[in-house]
Image (cartoon, rainbow, N blue to C red; front, side, top):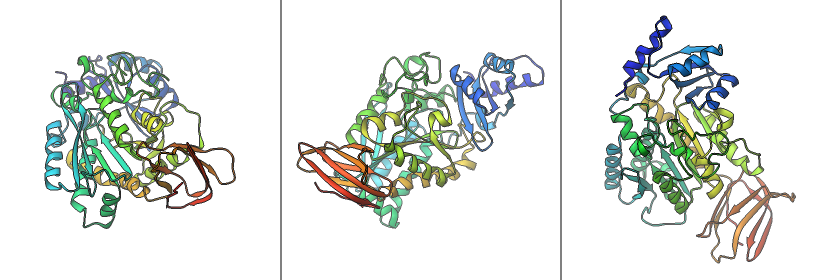
Length: 447
Protein backbone atom coordinates (compact mmCIF):
# COMPACT_ATOMS: atom_id res chain seq x y z
CA UNK A 1 0.00 0.00 0.00
CA UNK A 2 1.38 3.37 -0.98
CA UNK A 3 1.90 5.68 1.99
CA UNK A 4 2.42 9.41 2.21
CA UNK A 5 5.55 8.89 4.23
CA UNK A 6 7.12 7.42 1.10
CA UNK A 7 5.69 10.28 -0.95
CA UNK A 8 7.35 12.71 1.43
CA UNK A 9 10.71 11.21 0.55
CA UNK A 10 10.07 11.97 -3.11
CA UNK A 11 10.23 15.67 -2.36
CA UNK A 12 13.95 15.30 -1.75
CA UNK A 13 14.57 15.70 -5.47
CA UNK A 14 14.38 19.46 -4.76
CA UNK A 15 17.81 19.09 -3.19
CA UNK A 16 19.16 17.44 -6.32
CA UNK A 17 18.22 13.77 -6.04
CA UNK A 18 16.33 11.94 -8.78
CA UNK A 19 12.56 11.95 -9.03
CA UNK A 20 10.90 9.20 -7.00
CA UNK A 21 7.95 7.16 -8.12
CA UNK A 22 5.33 8.56 -5.74
CA UNK A 23 2.91 11.38 -6.44
CA UNK A 24 3.55 14.73 -4.85
CA UNK A 25 1.38 17.58 -3.67
CA UNK A 26 2.66 20.63 -5.53
CA UNK A 27 1.77 24.28 -5.10
CA UNK A 28 1.96 26.83 -7.93
CA UNK A 29 1.30 30.51 -8.36
CA UNK A 30 -2.29 30.75 -9.59
CA UNK A 31 -2.28 31.89 -13.21
CA UNK A 32 -4.73 31.28 -16.02
CA UNK A 33 -2.02 29.37 -17.89
CA UNK A 34 -1.36 26.96 -15.03
CA UNK A 35 -5.06 26.46 -14.29
CA UNK A 36 -5.77 25.80 -17.98
CA UNK A 37 -2.84 23.39 -18.33
CA UNK A 38 -3.83 21.37 -15.27
CA UNK A 39 -7.41 21.10 -16.47
CA UNK A 40 -6.64 20.31 -20.12
CA UNK A 41 -4.28 17.53 -19.09
CA UNK A 42 -6.82 16.08 -16.64
CA UNK A 43 -4.51 16.47 -13.67
CA UNK A 44 -5.70 16.23 -10.07
CA UNK A 45 -6.30 19.81 -8.97
CA UNK A 46 -6.80 19.51 -5.22
CA UNK A 47 -7.52 23.12 -4.28
CA UNK A 48 -7.19 26.84 -4.94
CA UNK A 49 -6.39 29.63 -2.49
CA UNK A 50 -7.69 32.99 -3.71
CA UNK A 51 -6.26 34.81 -0.71
CA UNK A 52 -2.68 33.80 -1.56
CA UNK A 53 -3.37 33.25 -5.30
CA UNK A 54 -2.01 29.70 -5.28
CA UNK A 55 -3.21 26.43 -6.77
CA UNK A 56 -2.37 22.89 -5.66
CA UNK A 57 -2.33 19.62 -7.57
CA UNK A 58 -1.37 16.02 -6.91
CA UNK A 59 1.14 15.11 -9.62
CA UNK A 60 3.34 12.24 -10.65
CA UNK A 61 7.05 13.02 -11.19
CA UNK A 62 6.61 12.94 -14.97
CA UNK A 63 3.67 15.34 -14.82
CA UNK A 64 5.68 17.67 -12.62
CA UNK A 65 8.64 17.49 -14.98
CA UNK A 66 6.44 18.55 -17.89
CA UNK A 67 5.23 21.55 -15.96
CA UNK A 68 8.76 22.43 -14.94
CA UNK A 69 9.78 22.40 -18.61
CA UNK A 70 7.19 25.11 -19.23
CA UNK A 71 9.08 27.34 -16.78
CA UNK A 72 6.08 27.42 -14.49
CA UNK A 73 6.61 29.05 -11.10
CA UNK A 74 6.48 26.15 -8.67
CA UNK A 75 6.30 26.24 -4.89
CA UNK A 76 6.52 23.13 -2.74
CA UNK A 77 4.54 22.64 0.40
CA UNK A 78 3.78 19.26 1.91
CA UNK A 79 1.69 19.77 5.07
CA UNK A 80 2.00 17.02 7.63
CA UNK A 81 -1.80 16.59 7.47
CA UNK A 82 -1.44 15.43 3.86
CA UNK A 83 1.55 13.19 4.48
CA UNK A 84 -0.18 11.15 7.14
CA UNK A 85 -3.54 9.38 7.04
CA UNK A 86 -6.41 11.38 8.56
CA UNK A 87 -6.87 11.46 12.30
CA UNK A 88 -8.97 8.54 13.54
CA UNK A 89 -11.40 10.95 15.17
CA UNK A 90 -12.88 11.84 11.78
CA UNK A 91 -16.08 10.10 10.69
CA UNK A 92 -16.22 6.64 9.15
CA UNK A 93 -19.24 4.90 7.58
CA UNK A 94 -19.84 2.91 10.77
CA UNK A 95 -19.58 6.00 12.96
CA UNK A 96 -22.05 7.83 10.73
CA UNK A 97 -24.64 5.07 10.96
CA UNK A 98 -24.25 4.88 14.75
CA UNK A 99 -24.59 8.66 15.02
CA UNK A 100 -27.73 8.86 12.87
CA UNK A 101 -29.47 6.03 14.68
CA UNK A 102 -28.49 7.37 18.11
CA UNK A 103 -29.78 10.82 17.19
CA UNK A 104 -33.13 9.40 16.12
CA UNK A 105 -33.35 7.43 19.36
CA UNK A 106 -32.73 10.62 21.36
CA UNK A 107 -35.12 12.79 19.34
CA UNK A 108 -37.77 10.49 17.83
CA UNK A 109 -40.43 13.19 17.51
CA UNK A 110 -38.36 15.60 15.43
CA UNK A 111 -36.29 13.15 13.36
CA UNK A 112 -36.91 10.47 10.77
CA UNK A 113 -34.39 8.13 9.13
CA UNK A 114 -34.73 7.25 5.47
CA UNK A 115 -32.56 4.84 3.49
CA UNK A 116 -32.33 6.59 0.13
CA UNK A 117 -30.48 3.73 -1.59
CA UNK A 118 -27.48 1.46 -1.36
CA UNK A 119 -23.91 1.80 -2.54
CA UNK A 120 -22.13 -0.54 -4.91
CA UNK A 121 -20.90 -2.55 -1.92
CA UNK A 122 -24.35 -2.67 -0.33
CA UNK A 123 -24.02 0.02 2.34
CA UNK A 124 -27.19 1.92 3.17
CA UNK A 125 -27.09 5.64 2.33
CA UNK A 126 -28.89 7.32 5.21
CA UNK A 127 -30.73 10.62 5.28
CA UNK A 128 -32.03 12.18 8.48
CA UNK A 129 -35.06 14.45 8.45
CA UNK A 130 -35.38 17.13 11.12
CA UNK A 131 -38.82 18.73 11.46
CA UNK A 132 -41.37 19.32 14.22
CA UNK A 133 -43.59 16.49 12.98
CA UNK A 134 -40.91 14.45 11.27
CA UNK A 135 -43.08 11.45 10.44
CA UNK A 136 -45.59 13.63 8.56
CA UNK A 137 -45.29 15.40 5.21
CA UNK A 138 -46.61 18.84 6.12
CA UNK A 139 -46.07 20.47 2.69
CA UNK A 140 -43.36 22.68 4.17
CA UNK A 141 -40.33 24.01 2.26
CA UNK A 142 -37.43 21.56 2.15
CA UNK A 143 -33.71 22.16 2.62
CA UNK A 144 -31.20 19.42 1.76
CA UNK A 145 -27.60 19.25 2.96
CA UNK A 146 -25.15 16.51 1.96
CA UNK A 147 -21.47 15.76 2.44
CA UNK A 148 -18.71 13.66 0.94
CA UNK A 149 -19.37 13.06 -2.70
CA UNK A 150 -15.55 12.71 -2.63
CA UNK A 151 -14.11 10.16 -0.23
CA UNK A 152 -10.97 11.98 0.90
CA UNK A 153 -12.80 15.13 2.02
CA UNK A 154 -13.04 14.06 5.65
CA UNK A 155 -13.99 17.43 7.13
CA UNK A 156 -17.31 17.55 5.29
CA UNK A 157 -19.23 14.97 7.39
CA UNK A 158 -18.10 16.87 10.47
CA UNK A 159 -20.17 19.81 9.25
CA UNK A 160 -23.28 17.73 8.59
CA UNK A 161 -23.10 15.91 11.92
CA UNK A 162 -22.54 19.23 13.68
CA UNK A 163 -25.62 20.62 11.92
CA UNK A 164 -27.70 17.66 13.08
CA UNK A 165 -26.41 17.98 16.64
CA UNK A 166 -26.98 21.74 16.68
CA UNK A 167 -30.58 21.60 15.46
CA UNK A 168 -31.74 18.64 17.54
CA UNK A 169 -30.19 19.66 20.87
CA UNK A 170 -31.30 23.29 20.64
CA UNK A 171 -34.87 22.67 19.47
CA UNK A 172 -37.34 24.12 21.95
CA UNK A 173 -34.64 26.27 23.56
CA UNK A 174 -33.20 28.44 20.78
CA UNK A 175 -35.78 30.69 19.10
CA UNK A 176 -34.24 30.53 15.63
CA UNK A 177 -33.69 26.78 15.71
CA UNK A 178 -37.23 26.14 16.92
CA UNK A 179 -38.68 28.31 14.17
CA UNK A 180 -36.58 26.66 11.46
CA UNK A 181 -37.51 23.14 12.58
CA UNK A 182 -41.19 24.03 12.98
CA UNK A 183 -41.52 25.70 9.57
CA UNK A 184 -39.35 23.57 7.29
CA UNK A 185 -38.31 20.01 6.52
CA UNK A 186 -34.55 19.75 6.86
CA UNK A 187 -32.90 16.69 5.31
CA UNK A 188 -29.26 15.84 5.96
CA UNK A 189 -27.22 13.14 4.21
CA UNK A 190 -24.19 13.16 6.52
CA UNK A 191 -22.00 10.93 4.31
CA UNK A 192 -22.78 10.09 0.69
CA UNK A 193 -19.76 8.20 -0.70
CA UNK A 194 -19.60 5.49 1.94
CA UNK A 195 -17.66 2.90 -0.06
CA UNK A 196 -15.07 5.41 -1.17
CA UNK A 197 -14.57 6.66 2.37
CA UNK A 198 -14.03 3.12 3.64
CA UNK A 199 -11.41 2.60 0.92
CA UNK A 200 -9.81 5.90 1.88
CA UNK A 201 -9.37 4.67 5.45
CA UNK A 202 -8.15 1.18 4.58
CA UNK A 203 -6.16 1.53 1.37
CA UNK A 204 -5.43 5.01 0.02
CA UNK A 205 -5.77 8.23 2.01
CA UNK A 206 -6.09 10.24 -1.22
CA UNK A 207 -8.95 8.14 -2.65
CA UNK A 208 -11.64 10.39 -4.17
CA UNK A 209 -14.14 8.29 -6.14
CA UNK A 210 -16.50 5.42 -5.40
CA UNK A 211 -15.14 1.87 -5.74
CA UNK A 212 -16.46 0.80 -9.16
CA UNK A 213 -14.18 -1.89 -10.60
CA UNK A 214 -11.30 -0.90 -8.33
CA UNK A 215 -10.77 2.28 -10.38
CA UNK A 216 -13.82 4.21 -9.19
CA UNK A 217 -16.19 6.77 -10.69
CA UNK A 218 -16.31 10.41 -9.61
CA UNK A 219 -19.87 10.67 -8.34
CA UNK A 220 -19.86 14.42 -8.86
CA UNK A 221 -19.22 14.02 -12.58
CA UNK A 222 -21.87 11.32 -13.01
CA UNK A 223 -25.12 13.33 -13.02
CA UNK A 224 -27.00 13.70 -16.32
CA UNK A 225 -27.05 17.48 -16.74
CA UNK A 226 -24.09 18.47 -18.89
CA UNK A 227 -22.51 15.02 -18.63
CA UNK A 228 -19.38 14.91 -20.81
CA UNK A 229 -20.25 18.25 -22.40
CA UNK A 230 -17.45 20.74 -21.82
CA UNK A 231 -14.18 18.91 -21.10
CA UNK A 232 -15.13 19.11 -17.44
CA UNK A 233 -14.53 15.44 -16.64
CA UNK A 234 -12.48 12.53 -17.92
CA UNK A 235 -13.23 9.36 -19.88
CA UNK A 236 -10.10 7.67 -18.47
CA UNK A 237 -10.79 5.24 -15.65
CA UNK A 238 -7.55 6.21 -13.92
CA UNK A 239 -8.46 9.91 -13.80
CA UNK A 240 -9.65 11.40 -10.52
CA UNK A 241 -12.64 12.93 -12.33
CA UNK A 242 -13.61 9.83 -14.34
CA UNK A 243 -17.28 10.35 -15.22
CA UNK A 244 -18.34 6.71 -15.71
CA UNK A 245 -19.70 4.95 -18.75
CA UNK A 246 -23.02 6.81 -18.83
CA UNK A 247 -24.97 9.45 -16.90
CA UNK A 248 -26.20 8.12 -13.54
CA UNK A 249 -24.35 4.84 -14.07
CA UNK A 250 -23.60 4.63 -10.34
CA UNK A 251 -26.15 3.48 -7.74
CA UNK A 252 -25.13 6.29 -5.41
CA UNK A 253 -25.91 8.91 -8.08
CA UNK A 254 -29.23 7.25 -8.90
CA UNK A 255 -30.15 7.19 -5.20
CA UNK A 256 -29.51 10.93 -4.83
CA UNK A 257 -31.52 11.66 -7.97
CA UNK A 258 -34.53 9.66 -6.79
CA UNK A 259 -34.38 11.27 -3.36
CA UNK A 260 -34.21 14.82 -4.69
CA UNK A 261 -37.08 14.12 -7.09
CA UNK A 262 -39.16 12.90 -4.14
CA UNK A 263 -38.51 15.70 -1.64
CA UNK A 264 -38.13 18.68 -4.05
CA UNK A 265 -35.75 20.87 -2.01
CA UNK A 266 -35.87 24.63 -2.23
CA UNK A 267 -32.18 24.87 -1.28
CA UNK A 268 -29.26 22.45 -1.25
CA UNK A 269 -25.70 22.57 0.04
CA UNK A 270 -23.19 19.95 -1.06
CA UNK A 271 -20.09 20.16 1.14
CA UNK A 272 -16.65 19.57 -0.38
CA UNK A 273 -13.03 20.46 0.41
CA UNK A 274 -10.86 22.35 -0.10
CA UNK A 275 -10.59 25.97 -1.41
CA UNK A 276 -12.82 28.23 0.73
CA UNK A 277 -15.24 29.00 -2.09
CA UNK A 278 -19.01 28.96 -2.66
CA UNK A 279 -19.99 27.51 -6.05
CA UNK A 280 -23.34 27.89 -7.77
CA UNK A 281 -24.52 26.72 -11.25
CA UNK A 282 -23.22 26.26 -13.86
CA UNK A 283 -20.13 24.07 -14.09
CA UNK A 284 -19.81 24.80 -17.81
CA UNK A 285 -19.68 28.34 -19.14
CA UNK A 286 -23.37 29.31 -19.51
CA UNK A 287 -25.52 31.97 -20.99
CA UNK A 288 -26.67 34.23 -18.19
CA UNK A 289 -30.39 34.55 -17.48
CA UNK A 290 -32.30 36.84 -15.08
CA UNK A 291 -33.58 33.75 -13.23
CA UNK A 292 -30.09 33.34 -11.80
CA UNK A 293 -30.12 36.70 -10.00
CA UNK A 294 -31.37 35.20 -6.75
CA UNK A 295 -29.00 32.22 -7.05
CA UNK A 296 -25.97 34.47 -7.43
CA UNK A 297 -27.13 36.95 -4.78
CA UNK A 298 -27.64 34.26 -2.15
CA UNK A 299 -24.31 32.67 -3.07
CA UNK A 300 -22.64 36.04 -2.59
CA UNK A 301 -24.34 36.44 0.79
CA UNK A 302 -23.10 33.03 1.94
CA UNK A 303 -19.62 33.88 0.69
CA UNK A 304 -19.62 37.11 2.69
CA UNK A 305 -20.74 35.36 5.87
CA UNK A 306 -18.05 32.67 5.54
CA UNK A 307 -15.35 34.89 4.01
CA UNK A 308 -15.31 32.48 1.06
CA UNK A 309 -15.13 33.54 -2.59
CA UNK A 310 -18.40 32.96 -4.53
CA UNK A 311 -18.82 32.12 -8.21
CA UNK A 312 -19.40 29.35 -10.72
CA UNK A 313 -17.06 26.39 -11.07
CA UNK A 314 -15.80 27.60 -14.46
CA UNK A 315 -15.03 31.02 -13.01
CA UNK A 316 -13.34 29.86 -9.81
CA UNK A 317 -11.82 26.49 -10.70
CA UNK A 318 -12.35 24.95 -14.13
CA UNK A 319 -15.14 23.49 -16.23
CA UNK A 320 -16.95 20.73 -14.34
CA UNK A 321 -19.66 18.75 -16.12
CA UNK A 322 -22.06 16.20 -14.67
CA UNK A 323 -22.16 17.83 -11.21
CA UNK A 324 -24.99 17.45 -8.72
CA UNK A 325 -25.85 21.13 -8.38
CA UNK A 326 -26.30 21.67 -12.13
CA UNK A 327 -28.65 18.68 -12.25
CA UNK A 328 -30.63 19.83 -9.20
CA UNK A 329 -30.97 23.35 -10.56
CA UNK A 330 -31.96 22.33 -14.08
CA UNK A 331 -34.23 19.38 -13.35
CA UNK A 332 -35.83 20.28 -10.02
CA UNK A 333 -35.48 24.07 -9.64
CA UNK A 334 -33.37 23.65 -6.51
CA UNK A 335 -31.19 26.62 -5.61
CA UNK A 336 -28.00 24.65 -4.90
CA UNK A 337 -24.49 25.40 -3.72
CA UNK A 338 -21.21 23.59 -3.34
CA UNK A 339 -19.29 24.92 -0.35
CA UNK A 340 -15.59 24.02 -0.40
CA UNK A 341 -14.36 24.19 3.20
CA UNK A 342 -10.80 24.74 4.44
CA UNK A 343 -7.86 26.20 2.56
CA UNK A 344 -4.73 24.96 0.84
CA UNK A 345 -3.00 25.48 4.19
CA UNK A 346 -5.26 22.81 5.72
CA UNK A 347 -5.68 20.31 2.86
CA UNK A 348 -7.98 17.29 2.79
CA UNK A 349 -6.97 16.04 6.23
CA UNK A 350 -6.61 19.01 8.57
CA UNK A 351 -5.36 18.53 12.08
CA UNK A 352 -8.51 17.41 13.90
CA UNK A 353 -7.85 19.10 17.23
CA UNK A 354 -6.85 22.37 15.59
CA UNK A 355 -9.36 22.64 12.76
CA UNK A 356 -12.47 20.51 13.36
CA UNK A 357 -14.40 22.77 15.75
CA UNK A 358 -13.14 25.93 14.10
CA UNK A 359 -14.37 24.73 10.70
CA UNK A 360 -17.82 23.53 11.74
CA UNK A 361 -18.53 26.67 13.76
CA UNK A 362 -17.46 28.89 10.87
CA UNK A 363 -19.64 26.97 8.42
CA UNK A 364 -22.80 27.14 10.52
CA UNK A 365 -23.37 30.58 9.04
CA UNK A 366 -23.86 29.02 5.58
CA UNK A 367 -26.66 26.56 6.31
CA UNK A 368 -28.21 28.95 8.83
CA UNK A 369 -28.42 31.58 6.12
CA UNK A 370 -30.42 29.27 3.84
CA UNK A 371 -32.83 28.34 6.63
CA UNK A 372 -33.33 32.04 7.34
CA UNK A 373 -33.62 32.87 3.62
CA UNK A 374 -36.67 30.60 3.39
CA UNK A 375 -38.41 33.36 5.35
CA UNK A 376 -37.19 36.05 2.96
CA UNK A 377 -38.47 37.44 -0.35
CA UNK A 378 -40.35 34.65 -2.11
CA UNK A 379 -43.66 33.39 -3.43
CA UNK A 380 -44.81 30.40 -1.39
CA UNK A 381 -48.07 28.50 -1.28
CA UNK A 382 -50.04 25.62 -2.71
CA UNK A 383 -52.44 25.21 -5.61
CA UNK A 384 -55.04 22.64 -4.68
CA UNK A 385 -57.23 22.12 -7.74
CA UNK A 386 -54.56 21.09 -10.28
CA UNK A 387 -55.60 23.82 -12.71
CA UNK A 388 -52.16 25.41 -12.82
CA UNK A 389 -48.80 23.91 -13.77
CA UNK A 390 -46.42 26.88 -14.07
CA UNK A 391 -45.77 30.29 -12.59
CA UNK A 392 -44.25 33.01 -14.76
CA UNK A 393 -42.64 35.99 -13.07
CA UNK A 394 -41.59 39.26 -14.65
CA UNK A 395 -40.60 42.59 -13.21
CA UNK A 396 -43.62 44.84 -12.92
CA UNK A 397 -44.51 46.45 -16.23
CA UNK A 398 -42.03 44.37 -18.26
CA UNK A 399 -43.18 41.87 -20.89
CA UNK A 400 -40.05 39.71 -20.65
CA UNK A 401 -40.47 36.70 -18.33
CA UNK A 402 -37.55 36.54 -15.92
CA UNK A 403 -38.42 33.23 -14.28
CA UNK A 404 -40.64 30.28 -15.10
CA UNK A 405 -41.34 27.96 -12.18
CA UNK A 406 -42.89 24.50 -12.50
CA UNK A 407 -45.39 23.92 -9.72
CA UNK A 408 -44.54 20.78 -7.74
CA UNK A 409 -46.67 17.66 -8.19
CA UNK A 410 -48.21 18.17 -4.74
CA UNK A 411 -49.29 21.68 -5.73
CA UNK A 412 -46.68 23.52 -3.70
CA UNK A 413 -44.54 26.35 -5.03
CA UNK A 414 -41.49 28.08 -3.56
CA UNK A 415 -40.20 30.80 -5.86
CA UNK A 416 -37.18 32.56 -4.33
CA UNK A 417 -36.85 36.13 -5.61
CA UNK A 418 -34.88 39.30 -4.92
CA UNK A 419 -36.95 41.97 -3.20
CA UNK A 420 -39.00 43.86 -5.76
CA UNK A 421 -42.34 44.40 -7.48
CA UNK A 422 -43.46 41.72 -9.94
CA UNK A 423 -46.20 40.65 -12.30
CA UNK A 424 -47.05 36.99 -11.65
CA UNK A 425 -49.03 34.68 -13.92
CA UNK A 426 -50.28 31.20 -13.02
CA UNK A 427 -50.76 29.10 -16.15
CA UNK A 428 -52.23 25.68 -16.95
CA UNK A 429 -55.79 24.67 -17.67
CA UNK A 430 -56.67 28.12 -16.38
CA UNK A 431 -54.74 31.41 -16.28
CA UNK A 432 -54.64 33.90 -13.44
CA UNK A 433 -52.53 37.06 -13.44
CA UNK A 434 -51.50 39.19 -10.47
CA UNK A 435 -50.00 42.59 -11.25
CA UNK A 436 -47.63 44.72 -9.20
CA UNK A 437 -47.07 42.20 -6.44
CA UNK A 438 -44.65 43.54 -3.83
CA UNK A 439 -42.30 40.80 -2.66
CA UNK A 440 -40.26 41.79 0.40
CA UNK A 441 -40.94 38.71 2.49
CA UNK A 442 -42.94 35.51 2.09
CA UNK A 443 -45.88 36.25 -0.21
CA UNK A 444 -48.70 33.77 -0.82
CA UNK A 445 -50.87 34.07 -3.93
CA UNK A 446 -54.05 32.00 -4.27
CA UNK A 447 -55.19 31.80 -7.90
